[in-house]
Length: 288
Image 1 (cartoon, rainbow, N blue to C red):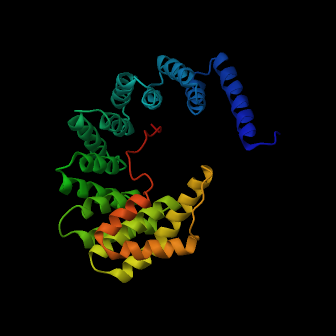
Image 2: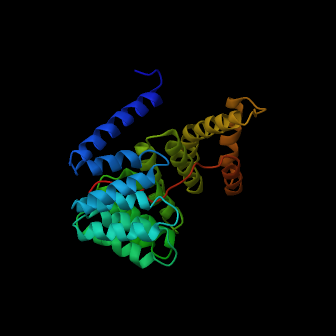
Image 3: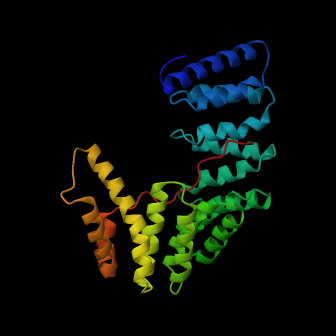
């Protein structure tokens, strides 16, 4: 056994690849899909994964069309081929391929209606994971606030707690919905799986509570979020060989007090404490 975890994974992948290729040589075409999955997870081997998937399809395994689409969707200039693969997967009975098709069209200019139709088809077929991506599509488009909110709440009803934060963003921008936005950000904070998610939820909650006049609640939210932001910024600065001139606790107190003062101060602090990346569409799902 090798010493490093990465080396162990490499050895495991090498052994698995050898087994799959031996099985294929013996006529086991079912191993082609497994080989494709293995290769698709190895950077730089996407072409080999594509070849394995196409061999599997040629051998009659139409369930592999969706897997082929997920590989092609990540390759520059292969969007048309990925779309074809997803449509073939849907024709073969895959509902997840409709969600993946929507995800592919989601990022293409002037294909909003097609992306929305794909997501809605997936939902109608029982694929509830598509509600989240549909909400993001409608939210990003603008002018569909009611529909986007409905989609996010359906995603939450399906157990997708990632929808809390974009729901909060949507509601924050709507007149008279700050209390609802605060509830969404609380949901996001409760459901956070990472420090970055906790940071963005609690800072957003604090900002909304300031606007609602609840400074005590805002302070409590900032006391959770700002230390996380400071920790992240310190780590990022450390990687660049930089240090902060003020002691961490003093900086936290200064940041909380400044953030509580006015909306203008909040805007300044948002620049000084950049939020981690917000929300984006889900990557393609590889199940059938």
